[in-house]
Image (cartoon, rainbow, N blue to C red):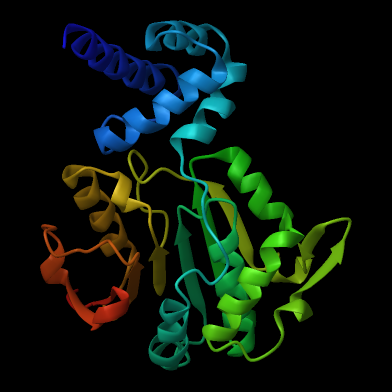
Length: 275
């Protein structure tokens, strides 16, 4: 019991050190999730205690990207939950067609799979040329992978099936070239994309969006931080703008919930209703 208490103290001090030294704020993330990821990081990086890991992080910035790789979840796939993208295609896109220009924010874009899914969808629906996509994440290494648009070829079968189930109008193979066990997605899919470091924990709104898609990110936040993120999304959306969340996420308990209505309930797509 005493060792567990000391371990909790060490973890909180480590998170505080990360914030004070590098301005990465994980202090209000779900503690059970943080503990699980930090335990894996400590073991894989070869440290016997969190205090030893903290000392190394404070004095050797080169370890930071490796630690962030454990703390930021980089598990995704293209057209994940195909019914969500089908709902965007069938229910949201008809509304977006009425605008002469569009801005779409993929918040917590990780290594880019959701970004390319959305870019392909907008191309197939004829809206790509009038859309600017903002792909943001706190992990620069993940952003670099997203910007490269290169994925292992053994993942493409799943991506292809998801694309088909999402209502894809062409073959996914039309959007990438395969070579040396990798698939490289067409660089034209990135021509209207802005990749940027942005934290939902510490950063502010940076523009007005027509659609914000932030899926499977807030499940790692505590209630206070979830509320902050939803407030950011609300402030990023004009009246009638759309917000898409992950299947296990909701705005139900947020102080901002009255600013939205359920647009496609089963897919956690909301529409802002107030000014």
